[in-house]
Length: 217
Image (tube, rainbow, N blue to C red):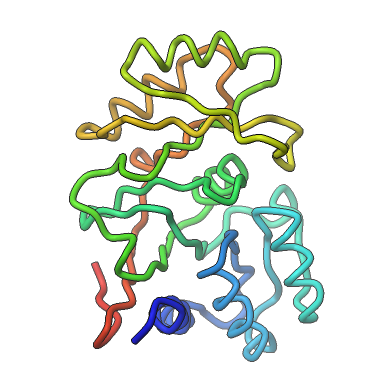
């Protein structure tokens, strides 16, 4: 089973968690796109969706799935999203697509967070993937200096602006052995909107598409 097939298998497995009448929180990324396509085939079962990004909103809308504002419908029963890295303890790095802040908000506002990944995303420790951090533009240099002090090598994501009008610093060289502590530490830097560590609010269920099957953690 190739990577795209693994992604699709994990995405299809997430459909089993949907209940009739749900408004589903929907994340962003290539694996989630498989979920959106599958969701469109059962859209009569749900009341609609809350999108974590403008790209996701456009895809949902194009498939005839009704969109809702989180402020009007939260809390949600279910949120489905991917990850750039995931541990077996269901802690994650997210934000490769740049939607980490909205993703973190929807995750916090949902009763269950189902994370869908292919097996290449499963790791023993977070940090191999550069850690995305959403930052207010005027704080870029200040935040970068603070990240260097904790061992990081921050790199501006060139030509990219988040849906919230901010920048992303992709931070290399961090082996994240204590995800909750590092999430708290980086979030405390003035100018940081949020960091792409999902540890305080990790996944409730991790579905990993593998060569043979979908494994659930």
